[in-house]
Length: 270
Image (cartoon, rainbow, N blue to C red; front, side):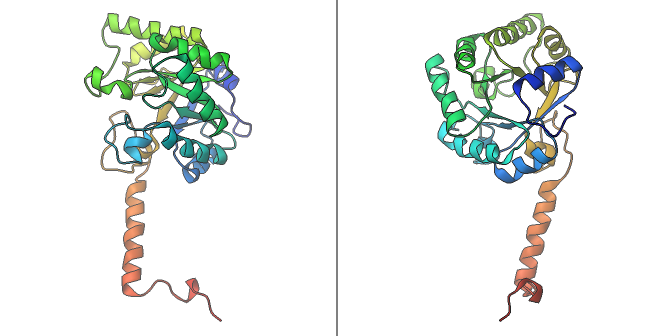
């Protein structure tokens, strides 16, 4: 979106698609990064259940709970004055049906200040999407590789390969749209399949490892900023923030050990 001054609302997402303007999304888990990304003009901030393996030390996203996510969503919502804040539904918070999904969505909007929520799955969660939409809670869908289903998918594997799988993925995307979803994330999907889904949907598609012919892109911010030695193949590292942070920590430790910090400039006098 070109306008970086007014609050991003759900209708702006569809308008951006109609104009052919690319949408931007990054994850955020705390106030400082949310403020920086918001000021940089990022359209959507996703408080993802990826907080589990990026911030909380888990091997996967599955252990993350709603109670763990709510403080993070609250911090991001308080710090983002323009971006649309999307809260991820963690595993176990919506699968049992529309009533459970609605209760989770109410918590994220009422207690944490989220503007929208994100659910993994297609036709199997259409009823949950409809219940949330009918209650006035915008929903972003998530198809392709869905991390919460990693165990049944057989690991981190590209989804939608082959005509049958591609057709199933398209049917899931259409079902989400018909249930009221305002956008759909496509993760680790062949670029031609993602392009086809983007063409048939009225709502925007947000890609992550889904090629360039989608309506927007999302990355985990630590992958984007180079906070580790490894990042997924689909994640371009735009900086080496981890290296800079490590250098700063080492320089600080060296100064403290040498007795050069704090000096007169950083001390108070009577």
